[in-house]
Length: 470
Image 1 (cartoon, rainbow, N blue to C red):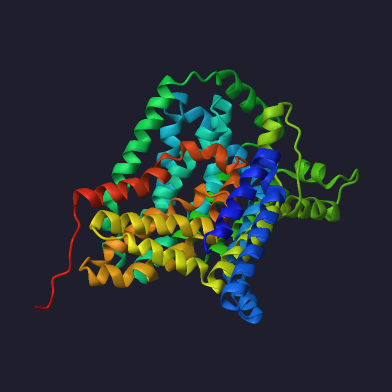
Image 2 (image 1 turned 90 degrees about the horizontal axis):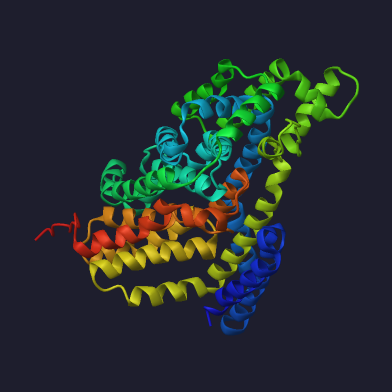
């Protein structure tokens, strides 16, 4: 009975993808989640006589837990618009096309995103800043969107997973009772081999792929120079943003300050674009104010003389994030009903029944984390729920807690971006402008990590047990 809501959701979303295609996230998926929530409520009401007040509270708590993510999404929408109009992202694209050669572009983008994410501890910020620039460079070289986004996401989540500044890394270590750097060192045994495999695939693909983007590079550079003021001084904004992140300022504060810096730069360096976006024939302070407000909250179209480049420099601002926020709310509603009705706990108990040896226990942990990413649409909830469910089992069987913390990260953190309705999948697909199912086949690191975790457990490599007091 507890599996019925998931079956309903799977059937509905499958039908939506067949009918709506890439437009599924525009509303069809949201309706599917609400219908599956209703099915869950009906089953819970008739099987357990669930009190409606408890259900409402659980749903409210789930949605409230995503409030910081929603605010960050709105800020990321604004940062995408302001950094583009200010010429920051175009400058990064312009110089990046001259430095990064096509043959090593996929490997270079993964390594670059990995280093940035490792330093700042945020895959979201990495993708929203350097990731956008790399999308432009990759398109100029003629690579498919899926390959570009896959290389960016691979690097961003590798760095996020191993960074001591990452919230998911800190969360996984703390909820399992593992010292932070012990947790990070233990993850190296599964994370580094997986990343090396991914880089090898990207390297082979770069040298064997027939990309014809040299002409596009020249046209892109001309279009950027004609439209924007390109200057290395504009790179001071991302540098200052990196400094704020390194000093461990709160994410919301960093993003807000980055937006303010970009607004000032746009008004001083790109006034012609601000005036064009305002839609007014006259000039003045109020016209500039109107233009920058539109850049932050609305859609902007900039004519560069190149159709592909026009699409690349188009931004949607905060309004472009609204379908994502809508989907997050519906996904959290579904997760709240599953939790309140006890259906999620029923399925978890079934999984624990099959966890007997080391490999099966790790596989159950990783599988549960992936399942929670699908069911609850949030990596933080997946980490916390999976850890709390398996913590006693790992302790009773004598395993050190770092095995649990690593399994949670291998299953929850990296796979969240592969689920179209998960907060991570929604965010990255929206920011990069690439559908989740388009980049999914090329995120080798993200779907190989759970398999590597199970493989390492099956051969018993570095699997440690606690020494009993006796």
